[in-house]
Image (tube, rainbow, N blue to C red; front, side, top):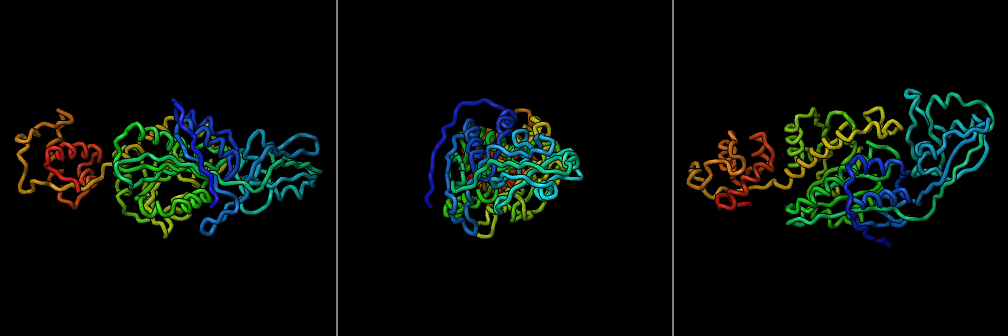
Length: 435
């Protein structure tokens, strides 16, 4: 592969997730092109990303990287001389990946190139034609119904030619080379919840983990166009993924007010599944657990049989199940800063629990430990914790090499991180031994 790499260095930036989302929202993105690069430039203000350019025509398993698409303008001029479906007013007006076109058509022929949603007359749909050379426009159905018979002038100033597919990643090294991936996709145009909410929460998680500076696992943050981007990324990093990646998370649909949904891993019973369920249970928010399904987002690439990486996804409303999905109603009003913050806290807890999920062996396994003899009669973490005795005795009792900290924390209905702090103290006193 003739792949090009470059590094964009992080700049100090204190933008909130919502401010970042507002900056990204107006850009016309696609699976390739300058919209993706412009978006990554904004992401680089938060995350020091490495850019990879994969040339058009590159074979990636059963797929081929397509030609690069860019667009300058697109509109229709009606018989009355008025512009309609103007790309400059809303980039969803153009079918993504439309080929260049200039011509005059009668209304009946033009209709075959126009998409609208009769059941939602006030929204513009989002449509694509990635792998089929075609063109089209999207418009509100109420405006579609107003079209009069006559001749319409159509102009699409776009290019579709050899270029490259742009991928980005950032890695935070841990104590081990074993990795957890956090993936989000950057191909959708002005859609706030589907796509962009995942990007901004991923960036916030990167900043949190970088400040944490004591992670056991390494973390790989991936920003790629959906499907073809994940496939190309896996092709490039196949050996590394098969050797080092233990599990992952795909972030999308995180900013609306819907209840939480967890899409389980392909395995269905991985430690990640148990941790996500326990975090959601402790959060107090309503939630639903759902089995892995295909299709979906990029978890279906990471979890494809050859890789079989356990990848889960916590969402708010699920893609395809909220009426604003893939329409102009998925906008900056639909996503709320409060919802992004709530979701960030959920993911932060998941990562904390993942990073502390170890097995321990009690070095003094015969009968109960005399706690005060070892300076453990009072909680070393929270002096007035009435549940401390139950926590430490349960931890000691089940530290038999067969129960993980995640399993012990579930017994106690507390976070794995909290139990891990007690385990650290016991390990320092040589009462527990990490396996």
